[in-house]
Image (cartoon, rainbow, N blue to C red; front, side, top):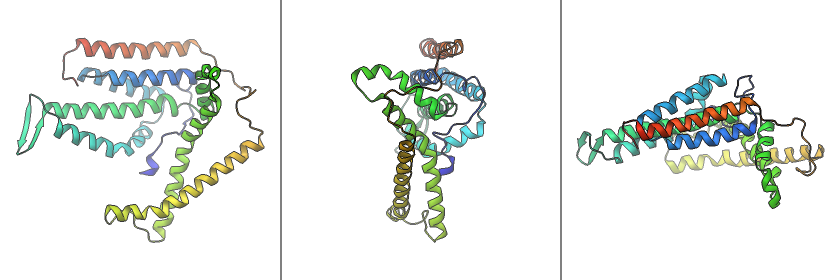
Length: 273
């Protein structure tokens, strides 16, 4: 399961999404999240699904990688399905067994929530992290937040911190998997016993993981000091960011997608949230 976590990884490519300005990718990600949250009936969720699949195909990221990244959400999706099916009431009763009643609306809401969660993770990863290098993401985030410099906020340091944290997620996941494999080779059991015993079994993993994380952080700090890193003060950019016609074209596409979701919610009949 740990190897299935792809959050924070970057997959080089030459797709139209890879070529977008990182600042525009951040803006598109925000618009995409808002558009998905506006979806409220069966037709708008169908549009969200088709749009997300289209983004995956355009990005040229192998679909198996996107699906692999969704595996850690299995427990969240299962909880969402159970909660919506058994706690949502409606007008169309499908099954009644004592206190347990299942309505058609509950099943539909469960499907809607699955689509929303999957689309949120898959779409944001494809638009942002999968197709944007950490350096480009740092530069884009810093320039978008540059107006806050007038308030004497450490914009560069904040952008660097967020990007490093995102970049180190795959590294820590890989380190955790290695530690678990080493502990299993020594006879550790993480899958049997009560919940308390399983929690206690994680202690031999957490301690070396924290030690390794602090060691990596110290090595990174030393490496940055050796390269004379002093923050964003007086810092120049090797690559200047410029918006192109391609960026504004994609902005228009995402805005049209949001407008279509709102219009479908307003005028298209169907089961809605």
